[in-house]
Image 1 (cartoon, rainbow, N blue to C red):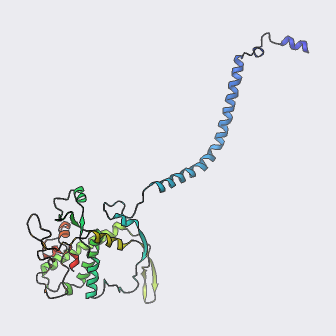
Image 2 (image 1 turned 135 degrees about the horizontal axis):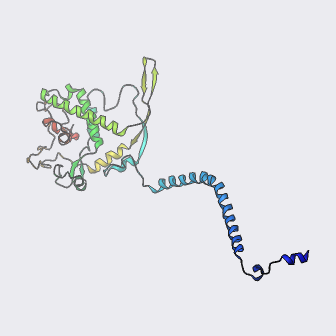
Image 3 (image 1 turned 120 degrees about the vertical axis):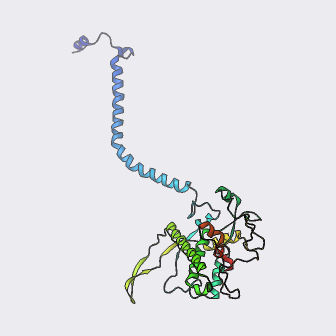
Length: 313
């Protein structure tokens, strides 16, 4: 057998000389291909599991990154207002609406009620910076203040003013006893404006607090259970900001119409809306929304000075 092996032994064996033949290279390449094939096969088998486990981790990382990377935002984060920080501090509040209203802002007209509205709207008029007015190109029509800045207000007080106006209209005989037919027409237009302000404000905020209906023993119809927790800002913060920027527009000779040279409040107090109003009657109207109403398109008359001087109800 040994002789037979020698007979069939090759005359030249490159492996014995340390050289590599072409077939050796083929063998090495095939081994490498086989190893890669096995790795690819293992990857193909593991890929679904890797994706299954990796995607949730990726999404979690993206979510956590967005939570920690983005700046704090609040209810008014898109509003261009120096007071928008107020929206970063909100709380839940259930409105006390069970039964007939018993608050100081409702009920029959009385001195306590009038004083409550005066207090609520005492910082209605505030100073707006020059930068804000110029940013929106309103310097040609805005009311410039002699000691810097421009006259303005926070929108919340516009809405509160409108609620007050509608309350006074419900008690027209008390607040407008001597109004002429023309003045009442203007008053009605003002009220319609206020209704639109409140409607648009409600639709703008879109309060999604849930309110359920309930049965009451004294009614065959479903009644609204108004004990809904609403997300609210800190109203004290609103008042504090307005107080810090408040301006007394009723100072004598303080503001003058640059086109007419007329002082809107020549005697240091607001113009009453109804010229026939009894000056000795303590149940006088607050007087005015003048500057604001002209911008909103309301008719100009004695009534037009009604909104901006809430402090003198």
